[in-house]
Amino acid sequence: MGLYPLFADLAGREVLVVGGGEVAARKIAALLRAGADVRLHTRDIGHPDIQAAVDEGRITCMQGDFDPAWLDGVWLVVAATDDHAFNAGLAAEAGRRRRLINVVDDAALSTYQVPAVVDRSPLVVAISSAGAAPMLARRIRERLETLLDPATGALAGLFARHRERIRTALPDLSLRRRWFETILDGRLDAVAGDPGALEATFLAELVAAGVRGAVQGSVSAIAAVEPDLLTLRALRALNEADLILVGPGVREDALEPARRDASRVDVASADEAAERAARHAGEGERVVYLYVESQAGREIEAVKAACANAGVAFRRIPGVPMKIS
Image 1 (spheres, rainbow, N blue to C red):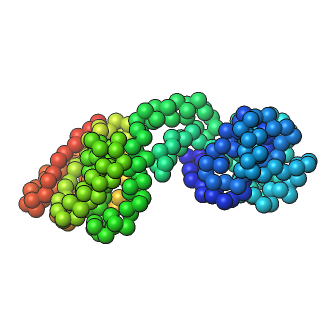
Image 2: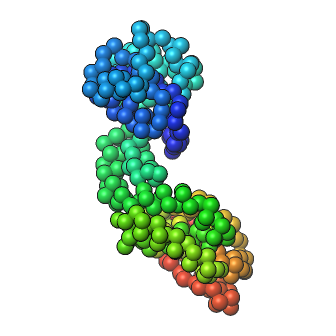
Image 3: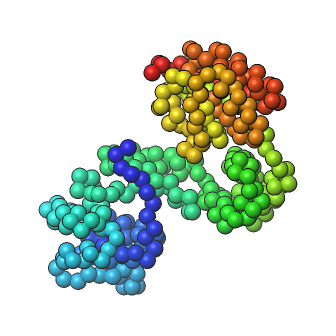
């Protein structure tokens, strides 16, 4: 990963944009939507949207020749000019002052990139090619636009507005996570187009989940394969896991698709894998046992037997074996 992804809170914070054409207009529009205090320097305003923003007092024009000292008062810089020499000089000045700068269409001069965005506020999906292939990032964005309908944003808003209510109704993390997954798996699809009905059903589901109480854990034994060879069933189990037990010989890249906040424990023997799997699943956790197919016969049988004795659901998800490290 060449760039570190982040989302910046620019509300009320100063951002300097240099340039007055169509590209600058797009950058300014996005910054204004984020609540930034935009400061503009340009010799010629060449786009009506910029002129309108200036006339309405939504952006501040920095008059006269460019002054590098302007950089001292801003959080971010955007260079949207076609003057390479000026852009290079501006990037150097920004670097000396430790200000992040985006030079449009020049990844080498930029210290941050602006991604392609799918906006379903408060849910925002950003896609970046690190400046290498902007058209690819845009194409992926177009595909995601068709996958995420407008109701996605409304649902994200409900999660945000009722965060404390959710925590109170479902204080147990495993139960709360399970409820989230139920909601996200399409439980509210029938009322997604009606904001009032969506919220009412959302809250009714929350109350019902709180009444139902404790959750039932499970164990999924998954063969370690190359990440792009995982079945959909295996991917889902890895994304839902509370605990991942990692068997001998499993390579690190096999864990890439797993949920980042899942606990991970290396197990060295069949007895350890069986004991941990049955115990944690019995406590309501979703456990994944990740193993190397060619050497896990006894381990799988031990885990399966322990789950049967504990009354815990067990399933095995086979796959194409990886090479043992």
